[in-house]
Length: 431
Image (cartoon, rainbow, N blue to C red; front, side, top):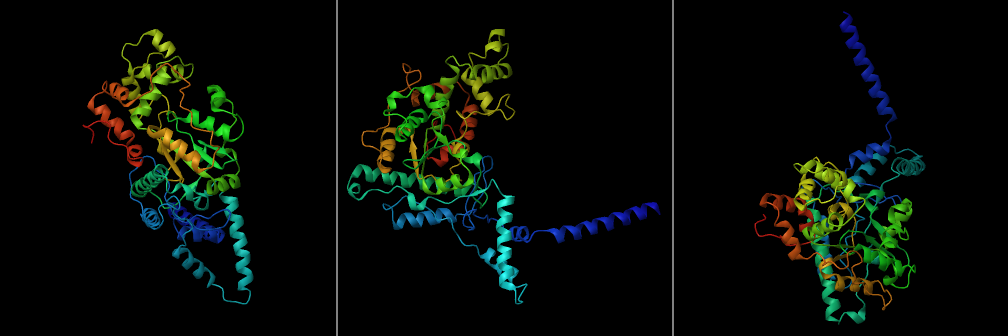
C-alpha cells in the first residue's frame, strides 16, 4: 500500500512539473526547435544556412554552398572571388511563422505581433551573447583591376585563387557537418586585424607568420620598413590587435567587410620546421614543458639529465607524442591542424596563399589591397638565419626515420589539411 501511494505521488508530481514547464516555455525556443539549422543574425535577424567546422569526424554535408560557388565562378570568374551569399531564406521558418500567426485572428493581431517580435529580439540577445552569425564579405572582396586584366601574371594568380577557394569549399561541403555557421570569439583568436587597409590575417605558424606580422605593422604605420622590426617585437610587442579583442559588433563588422586571408604550408614540411625550431635549438619553454614530458613517456632508460632539462628530443619520440591520443602534454599551435587554427570551413577566407609560392602570392595580395608599391614581402629568415630552411628534401630525411605505419598515421593526422589545400601525398606508399 505504501509503495502504491509513493508511486502515485511521483506520477502526480511529474505531471504537474510538465504542465508548469510547458506553460513557461518561451515561444521563441519552440519555433527555434522546429526549424533546425537556423540561427539569427544579431544585426539583421536573418536566418543562415552553411557549414561549421568539425575537426574529428568525417561526415556528409549538404552541397548547396559548393554548387552555388561553382555557378558563381562560371558566370563571373574574373570580376570577383568566388563568394557564396549566406542570407538564404528558409521555407520551414516561413511556414512556422505563418502557423504561429494564424493562432490569433482577432482585432489586436498586428499589435501583438509587433510586441512578440520585440520580445524575440530581446530573448535572442540575452540568451546568445557569444554567438555571432557570419556572412561572406561579398561586397568587399578584392577584385582584379581593369588595367591588370591583360596582365598574364596577375590573371593567372587570380585564377589560382579561385581554384584554391573552390577546392576548399568542396572539401568543407563534403566532410564537414552541421548546416549552421556560428562563430565564437574562440574561432577568431588567431586572426590579426589591420584596420587601415581592412585586412584580417589568420596566423599559421611556420608558414611565414613572422614576416606577415611585419607587413601588417608597416601597413598600420607602426614601422617604416619590415627590416626595422625585430623578432621579439613581432611576437611579444602586442602591437597588432586580435579579432577576439573586439566586441561582438566589431567582430561581426570586420568579418563581413574586411579582406580575410591565410597562408598555409605543406603539412609534413611545416611539422619538421616546427620540430627543428623548437627542439633542436635552446628553448626555455618547449624543452621543459614539452621535452621533459615527451622524454619521460617515450624514451626507454632516459638519463637524469635528459629528464631534468627536456633537451634532445628525437623526431621519432616527437611523432609518438603527436599521435598519442593520451598525450602527456597538450597540443601546440606550431603543429596543430590549419583546420583548427583558422576554421576555414567556418570563415570564408577571401585569399588563400601558400608558403611554397610565397613571393608571388604575398605580393599579389598586397597589390590587390592597394598597399604601397614599395612594400614587398620580406625574404629574410630572422631565426637561425645561418641554418638552411626546411625543404622537401630535409623533410623526407626526417620522415625516413619513421616506420611506414608511423608515416601513414602522420598523414592521417593531417589528412584534412592535405585534402583541403590540395597537397599531394608526400610518400608513394601512403594511401
